View 1 (cartoon, helix red, strand yellow):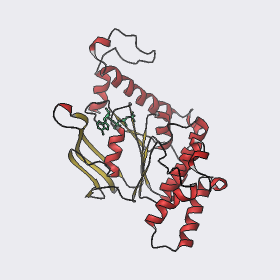
View 2: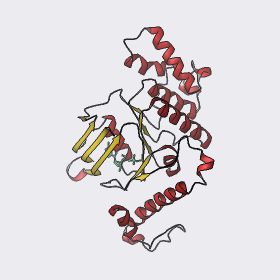
View 3: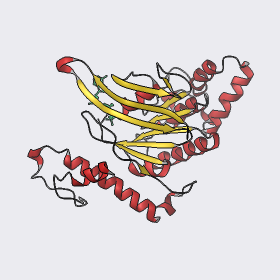
View 4: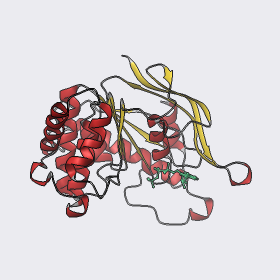
Length: 290
Ligand SMILES: Nc1ncnc2c1ncn2[C@@H]1O[C@H](COP(=O)(O)OP(=O)(O)OP(=O)(O)O)[C@@H](O)[C@H]1O
């Protein structure tokens, strides 16, 4: 399987000297062509930092991040990113926001070709009726559809998503999950999804890797999601593999959270689902050894 992204002994910190904040420590990761990878983690653990190293918006403090074997030196259209906060230009219409990226990437095309392409992607995300509206006139879900259309219209090799659906209601979130999956599988692209929702990760990904809590976060063990596609959310809930992998991931995260808890917190009551002794590192160590 061809690697598309490789992290080699990557560490990242912000600031220097006394104000230095270690965020990621010694990350080794390979994303292979065609896969759908989800990274799950606690808030503040460094997920956005990790994805920004893939976009090229950040350079690693130590180690290297490669795209198809070459160091990433900056952002490029072959690595499209969908952010959580939509990042649309408020004074442009839906059409114009999508046109921004299309005109840049397909500058050699005729204006008719670009126009047809923009309309196709606006239609694909179900916004043809709102094509002349401005972001301020759209709901959160509609805005996120625009930002998804804008990225997908450039047909990136690698689709990076930083908690793209986190702010949406459950129904809109479910619809957009399906839309992203449909486009990912139809175009046989590679996708990396950052999420704090384990169920979303299991539904969408081939592989889930937890990012341990920071500071100096590292990657946990990988969990393979061996469920047929297309996946059916209702049927999946009864699938023994789904139940097992979900429990394993949640137990891993709970154990991590507990083992990371400062000593003074040990007297606090633990959640009822806690599967291990309070403060024990044994569960985490078991996974780390695996
Ligand atoms: N530009 C920056 N300068 C200094 N510290 C930063 C900077 N960006 C992020 N950090 C710090 O790095 C840590 C990781 O941030 P990051 O945004 O990567 O985490 P995250 O897992 O994406 O968080 P969340 O889930 O809350 O979005 C945090 O402690 C954050 O305060």
